[in-house]
Length: 537
Image 1 (spheres, one colour):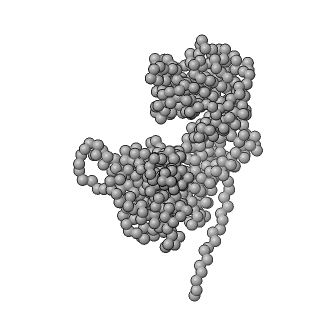
Image 2 (cartoon, one colour):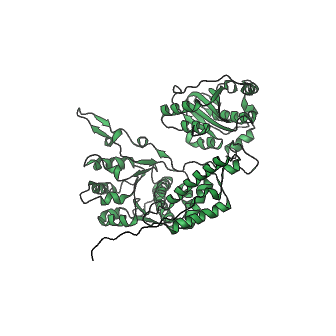
Image 3 (cartoon, one colour):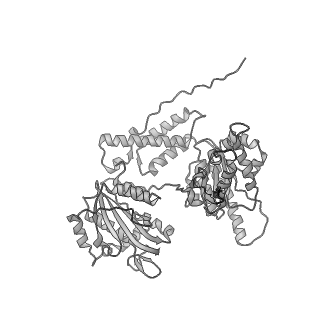
């Protein structure tokens, strides 16, 4: 397996489509010895200890069906409970966490890393409010419709597992062996992850993806006529295969803090805050039924700058900030480009514009490299029809629950805007993303390394700065990609680090996560060929 056993199981459980999820999960479990632990948790479904290569996954199959209100807070020293309309039961997540704690103690020396995964048919109605607690205690919860796709062949339970089961029998469940004060600490996020630590300093960061991609079909109303076409017999069908090719990202929590922590962009940060604060102020007046004159606030915006200057990242934060301020109802970001608007036939752009604007209700529609759409390859390019079609929707001042964001290079966007003054007037907010300097690039690179859970030695830090200085001094302005250059460098550092650890047989935990100067690649400047001018004397 390319991935570790634990990562294979966790990755499988995160797959959105249930049939595919079970296929990947069954494949991962093929590599494991599986032992049933039924006696440990009476009435809580099935429980299995799955072990492969000194890694263990405690897998719970929670077969409760119905709506439940989850409470992971212990009451008066008792186990946390889940409440349904007619009854309550001990929290299955708490029981799974408790079993993992006890197994870790019992199997010390036999199993080095543990993970807890629960598949449940329960509809936990307050899941969004409780899932951070699950993350804090390192329990991965996945709701499923059925278990029919799961195939588990349990092995004969060995002595060391039977001993555990005998101690924590049905008469004296595992909860009684768990310190409730320790559980309270776990809920508050102070529980340390279960990792095999050596005597040296241990460093761990729970690295979560900042932006979560959303399935396009999940944000549209499939009953809306705009997504249908009429068949020859007069019936209409949903255009699943003809949805415009876009990416959708969900809003993030605490976007203001994320924006503040971004390197540079001081002017952009100030402008974005002004717009969100003015929008929030208008919303507050409306909620209090106060009628005073305020300038019309347009959310339609231009982000201008070279590649890798943070335009797409700030676009997601912009939508999240407007959503947090109550200005946008959804706060998603729909990222489109020229291809998103153009179909197979001339005239498809009108329908695609309608679909994309429908998708963008409550959200931000970001058009990447918009100058390619607005200028077109030639004067007869039908991509030039897109913005005039869109202008009608933008002219409707009553429709304020969406924003269009045009992103592109400053020079090209200025040329595109000059072709139609009406477009410029519809996008009054103009933010220029300046190129990053060496210190900012260095700050990004260190943030990538340390934020990924690694330690950066002083000598490696100095070499990293020197390499970035060389890259910056010898950059080709026409091809320089700013933060993307840092991303490429970071990937090369990780590859070299992994290769060094394997070739040198590094096994100590701290050494495995320490970046040395040997891991920083050398940089050889490439001479920039001058562009040849063609002309006549």
